[in-house]
Image 1 (cartoon, rainbow, N blue to C red):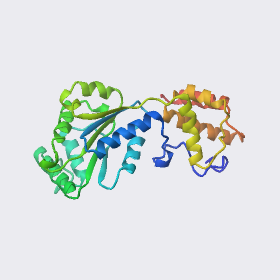
Image 2: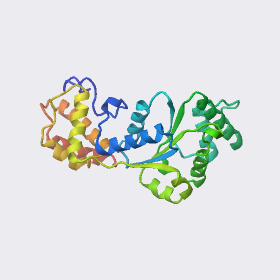
Image 3: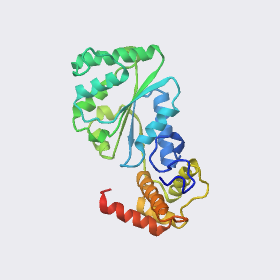
Image 4: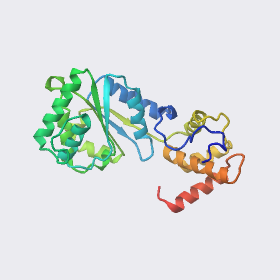
Length: 274
């Protein structure tokens, strides 16, 4: 809506999965390097931890785009609150296993055979699948974690291998610690933190430049307010900047002021929980 007014080619703060919007902050770049090491060296399993809005899903999407042709498919599991048989059946289907009864959950032993067969097929093609369990902190059934741990036993001599990434909020750490047999299988642990003040400035500048603007519409003093209101959390930064640009457009402003950003924040706080 406001793109033409601010001379933007596209919305810079809509949360697009476009990898060119990825900002290489210290924390995100370190996590990406660790995850690439995990996958490219076929190390088994890893952990990605970060609060809501820290950019975990976007980071996994960037990882999928950066991996070479030998790696994949990347299977995102977006709703992990299933029973162990249901989750394994879902993973089998996403990996490409065929089912004679697609609307029924197959028996557990059948599902395991299907996964083994499809992993063996990928191994023959010299491809290495990646399974990313998102929102894994919502899993409250220990049997699900145990099933995922047992899947890691599918090393090449048993019919194929894959990389498992568990992604979630900090609660996931305490759940994993109660499962030492799974925790010891985690080769890397990545902990995302909020952006610093300088990174917040760099994040906004980078997204504006990718969207086609070199001169920021935000007044320099606005970044102090933005950092204070967002806490350096990317999703909050996106939300505040997006609505501030909309308000500036509606007010026919020539730039975005701290007062406009504060007004946007107050409105968001009034109508929705963070």
